[in-house]
Image (tube, rainbow, N blue to C red; front, side, top):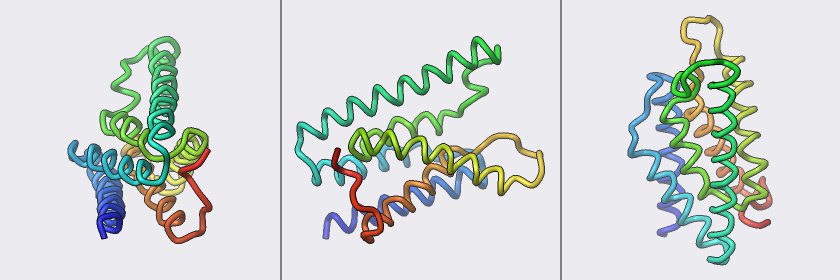
Amino acid sequence: MFIIFIKILLIVVLVCIAFQDIKERQVYWFLFPIVGICLGILYFLNTLPELFYVSVLFNLAFVSMLLGAVYLYAKLKLKTDFRNIIGLGDILMFFFLIFACASISFMVLLPSALIFSLVLHLMLSESKKNTSVPLAGYMGLFFSITFLGFWSGMIDTIYQF
């Protein structure tokens, strides 16, 4: 019963993040730790503790390198402030997603979420009124679909290497 509650809470919070970010371009900050805690509990209960800790460290390194590359690109190539490129909610989403799954799965799912976000934004943005991308929202939508697919058996596994 506890696991079902965690799964429902995770999906509800991810959908709330998606709705808020797409509609208002801002998300309540406390939703991101809830995502991280739910993801961490679900992954921890489905793997060995040692593998969980190693995966979280690798995922943290991967996200840090990704954000470091974006920071360098913003400073050196675009010559703009990092905060103009990516929002705090997007950064929080990246860091709380590190608890989601095994490193190999994470290195496939995170770029897939970014591609999904790009394609979805290009399809939905009819006008150039708002040029910002609700990345955290689109990623929340992507991961809610991914986890629903995993829990329904359509995706084999995301917790194993």
